[in-house]
Length: 131
Image (cartoon, rainbow, N blue to C red; front, side, top):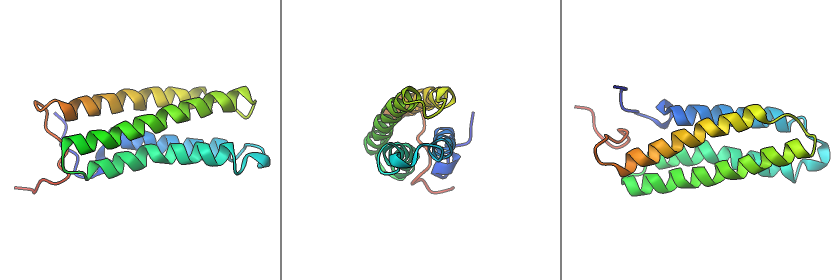
C-alpha cells in the first residue's frame, strides 16, 4: 500500500497534470502570434486550473470539499480536451500526446473522487498530525 500523501505534490494525479501544463506551454509557444490573447491564453488558463484545483482541494478538510475541487479540475480537463481538438483542427500542432495525457489524468481524478466518497479508504493526510 502506498504511503498517504503529505502534500499535493505527492499525488500522482497532480504530478501528471503539472507535466500536462508544461506540455501545453511548450505547444502553445508555437501558436501564431494572433492567438496570444485568444486560444493561447484560454488553453494555458484551463490547463493550469487542473493542478491548481487539485492542490487547493488537497488542503480542504472535508471529503465533500476535496471532491468539489477535484470536480472543478475535471471541468477544466474537459475544456482542455476541446482546446486540443481545436488546435489540431486549426493546424497549430499535433495534440495526440496531450489528449492521451488527459485520458490518464481523467481516470486518476475519477478514482481520487471515488476514493474520497468511499469511507473505506483513507484520505490523504492533509490535516492529520503525525503520531
